[in-house]
Amino acid sequence: MDRHLARYSSPLRFTLTRTSSNLLLFTLSSLNRLQLERKKKKRRRRMARMPPVLSLALPSETGRVLSIQSHTVQGYVGNKSAVFPLQLLGYDVDPINSVQFSNHTGYPTFKGQVLNGDQLWELIEGLSANDLLYYTHLLTGYIGSVSFLSNVLKVVDRLRSINPNLIYVCDPVMGDEGKLYVPQDLVSVYKEKVVPVASMLTPNQFEVELLTGLRINSIEDGLKACNHLHASGPQKVVITSMVIEDKLCLIGSHQKSKFQGEAAEQFKIVIPKIPAYFTGTGDLMTALLLGWSNKYPDNLDRAAELAVSSLQAVLRRTVLDYEKAGFDPQTSSLEIRLVQSQDDIKNPPVQYKAHKLN
Image 1 (cartoon, rainbow, N blue to C red):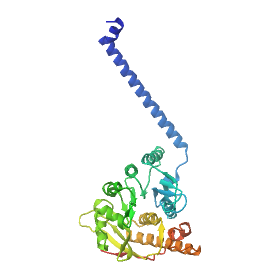
Image 2 (tube, rainbow, N blue to C red):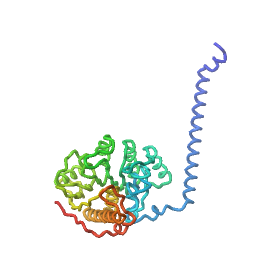
Image 3 (spheres, rainbow, N blue to C red):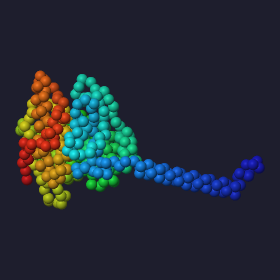
């Protein structure tokens, strides 16, 4: 055997070499820990020199909302329809745009970008790195993929690890009038994973059928569906639009206690039909329900009266303004007049009353 090879093959030499390697690894590990600790100290010193984030240092009486929804440059859907009304009602709102399009998809063409799940999580990590993840509410609307929705569930867990009392308001946007406009896989994720962690759900008639597997042909069917959803998780359920015997109505249900046998408080509001089609109304309605239900936490019926009254005022103004512009509002989908209706958002005259059903 070559003497050089023999030298390195010696058991003693091997033991010494292994010990040296372990010592080197230990030294490197210690250095890494020291460097990490220095970085943390630098970050703390840097943070100490920065002015406070006033929405955290002096929080509003209403709350701080993280809103994850779509966004359009022109028009009012998704975050464009939700953020401004919530701000008018006194909330600090931080929007994350799940998509950013030039305009809504009802136009002949649209351009833009779609945020993926990894990009969403990158934004959350950025907020976390600066201690900015304390929120009182999470609001979600249209989500177009299972991967993105899965990351939204991670966001719920992260936010509740910081604020266990976080209120999660979910508009499970999946379709309308019998038409599904998200991938079929999303339905099961909503049913099995999102519904159990939501505080409030705001589906329409078609969506509540998807979530419960029940057909909604009457008010009683709607109440049964609400109870079905309560059993899965959320204390508050609002079916924002149902057409029963050619009448448009909203059904609300609030299960204040999970004790066995205690019935939910349930009500309906009959809503006059406006002969026009609007974009962004569901997004606006959910934002208004969040806004008013936080101000009336034990009176969902009162919150719904205010939300419905605001929404109807916005829609009436929208129709009148299109008519003033010489356009027949029944011929196409209409962009809601949100800015022009801010007084009706802040101080709506209650014109639509809730009728208790139990």
